[in-house]
Image (cartoon, rainbow over all chains, first blue to last red; front, side, top):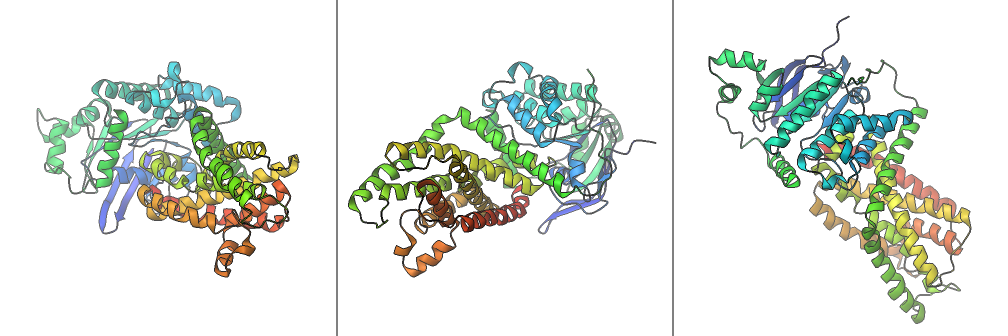
Length: 268
Length: 273
């Protein structure tokens, strides 16, 4: 029997009042791949992620995660997902180990193996040596890796990262991506990531989807999309051709901008 | 290194009530543990939060005991006041928990918690009882101060356990009330304003400072629908042995907490959007 798709979205739609944020998204993410969801502010990436993660409602049969309907079996789907939101969400008052242990408890990791599972997740995130320091003493890159450890402690099949490198310096960005790569290698888990950085998508994603105005405008491997536009084209060029140099200033929303600024401030 | 992945859960019917209760207890335990871990590292907060109840006992309590302005029968006013201040300190801790929820929403923590296999009611109950744990630690300091000031407190361990239950239930209710307000107003600033606006009426419109019999009729009505009054009545009965309606007090506090958890859970999704 073939393994079901990690994520399958069919005719996905969502509106905020009169604004249609997601407008008929059809998408299939294969098990084991690193899939990038790209697009300008307000393209509908985060809304799509929030529907996949059960944070926003999706109708029956609109989204399945490893064959399980998100609308009908939310709790079962959540057990398969590790989620890292855009903002820096680790608790600075707790140590790295306590932060991860909390999520082990929330995911019902059995008490007998919990300590070992926490140790393993911290190890995968490269934080073993800093696990007993409070998270407020961590650098921005370390906090991101701590969040990875929190997401990994339940051994999810699908790791969802919303703008994981936003606000990070280039060194921290590549360290986060290296960590994502090694985690994927060690576990074979599927990774769904949104990013604004085309260079990151090009380098680290197996396939990408370019979203604009709530719809998927292009889908394929970075190489396929570049080749489709012409020789010497980059993913940046594909992005521009899809969005029409759209800056998205009217669609990003002040809440999104504030959240991004807060993240950047917390990162220093 | 190879790490096994989670196996997709088998298709099964909804978990039974026993399983739900186990999940609820596990989540409440996890949230309370986090609260204790934070308190262990931030003892300054405990001390600063103890200042206000200490001032109420030391200044208001001592002065009004000497003035004999508030008739409390054979009980010294300071003894009468101490359980009220205990409830007040718990109220002041719990009523601003909604601000923490809004902060958690802004920091992405709430979204992350909502993506765990935790029913919203269990998440809210976890937060509510964590507020209770914090209030209990605070209560210890108020009780020690009251004992030092000569308040005749019970030493009966069963009554002390019952007192802890009352404090936790009261804190859980006011924490949920705060989350409900947060779910309606959605902003820290508005919640701060509303929190400040309702705290004093809740406190003065209860039996924390004076017997209900002394109140004008309209205030008596308010006092009877104010859960803080039931909390203070139970605390007073348990700690200093005044006549109390313990059955009614526990029932009202438990029912109010259940209703508040339900309403707060329903509004949690609004906060996460």
